[in-house]
Amino acid sequence: MKSTKELEQLLYKNETVADKTPSAIAEADAFCEGYKEFLNRGKTEREVVQYSEELLVKAGYRPFTVGMELHPGDKVYHINRKKCVLAATIGTKSLSEGFHLNIAHVDAPRLDLRPVPLFEKEGLAYFRTHYYGGIRKYQWPTIPLSIHGVVYREDGSCVNICIGEKDDDPVFTITDLLPHLGAEQNKKTLPEGITGENLNILLGSLPIEDEEASNRVKLRVLGLLNEQYGITERDFTSAEIEIVPAFKARDVGLDRSMIGSYGHDDRVDAYPALMAEIETQSPAYTSVCVLTDKEETGSDGVTGLNSMYTFHFLRQLCECEGVDYVTAFQASKCLSADVTAAYDPSYSEAFEPDNGTYAGRGVAIYKYTGSRGKSSTNDASAELVSYLTRLMNKNNVVWQIGEMGRIDLGGGGTVAKYVANQDIDTIDIGVPVLSMHSPFEVVAKSDVYMAYRTFKAFCEDAE
Ligand code: MN
Ligand code: MN
Image (cartoon, rainbow, N blue to C red; front, side):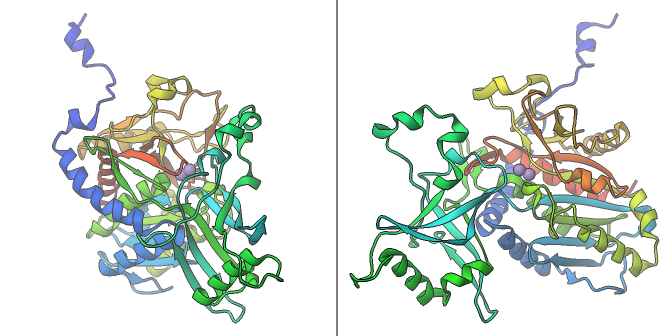
């Protein structure tokens, strides 16, 4: 028998980045300054895409056009309907040897406005909302909120709206009952305590002067919107307005080791994936970074990964080179990035510690997702896990592997299956998040940086 020391060498160790590669901590701090800027500039998928396009253009990416001549090292991008980014760096190998795909999503849970949102009740004006994605409704009242989006006016012109982000802007909020009158509400379960019909955005309290008029507060709000943006109530029917937390990304903890922000899911993978793509020069395999929309509602729709837009783009790249896309897809690999649930010691009963993924212990691998009996999962092959963990080890990436939590409690899915269903080998990785889907999610900076190192290594892998 081996000695205890030798036997201990045989264990799988789930170590912190700080213990394993202490030098990465300062690098992570520096990297995350750019990430916080990315979070603050992009509170909606449209804003993220707009900022990403700026970064791509600055880095020399050219708009992709069908049939264009492409050479190794060329950088091209395409924006899908203002909500998704596709960026590629052409490799030295033929596309018949496959793409290396890094995919993340840039939509986040939030409150959308309904088509007829504006109303007045007992002298207060509100917007009615319809929540987008999996929110816990009780988390949204009594915090400062901002309004972001686009409105198409009757003449077809478009106006961008963003109120609540500048220091001297007003903010908005959803009210909650005072504890003194909360006896009945307190008897309800968490999902019932605040309902979708309670999630109304407080807009104003000041009536117009004409005492004969009805809905005088609503009319003042509408008048202000009309003065500032030239819009009418009818124009909300052709609008996409999102209500999101008004606060900015902030360092969390005395050691400043974490970032608290709205929208980490999944901008915390999107930013590292985009940075890795931008910084990759003359790769062997053609790298493609996809920042997609609609993950939080199930990936359906023309900007979701269940649509063909990503695969059309890949096919069109193949056509430029005269390569059969089926051959290219079969040879491709994809890192499907999305956040994982960080083990939370305050709610340990929801987790299984041996298979938990922990904030501060590096990028997490989920071999499979899904719920109950792995329903709706892309279950990555052992071969692909082996490829990825060897690549990570070779590039000093601190990684961990696990599952979301206790297996009978629930679960979730990602975009991985939509890529795998196109005959592309795909595996889930991502940054662990505390308070996932809340207005103020928390991640460890070291994990964000390890995600970046992973994407970079994958873009540059030549084997
Ligand atoms: Mn996600
Ligand atoms: Mn999510």
